[in-house]
Image: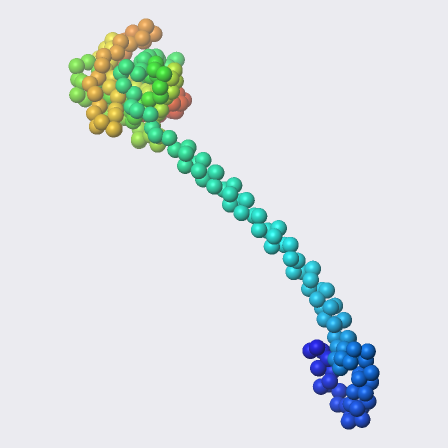
Length: 233
């Protein structure tokens, strides 16, 4: 209809032409005055609609609508990461561990390796570093030789954790011991416990301790302990 009206305005028809046109349209079978003029317009409108119709498909929104599936798949991963955070196992105590001692090969007895094995059927956690004492000086445990560890050492049944002791440096005056005291830290109770006396293994038998011995933090990786022990001076 818009195109038909525009053609009427564009062409200035005379009165005779108007009369002739009216008389010709009056002869139409259904008596409609606009059908003859409006017929070209729908063809142009249809061609315009035909070009735009493919770019505005009706089903496209319906195809994209189910995409909440991606949002749904993200939820389990978030829940899974949340459920993965477990409460730390309780601190290890004397009754949970078997303590072994050994030397490193080709070391001349200057460093001692302490191995703690969980002998229970439940995991426990070794916090920070062991309190190690020699002789009667139970109130002065060895200081740690490195900065605090980034993670605690939680060991399951039959699993092991390690700590290393620097005993002496070459040329130092030393004292010999056949046992040592060990205690474990428990941050939840704010108590460190009293050291228990541990006999050295048959492999070690005795240790010689200098003026400034020190100990590493507990570690699940023996090679990490070695790195700290042999870099310490």
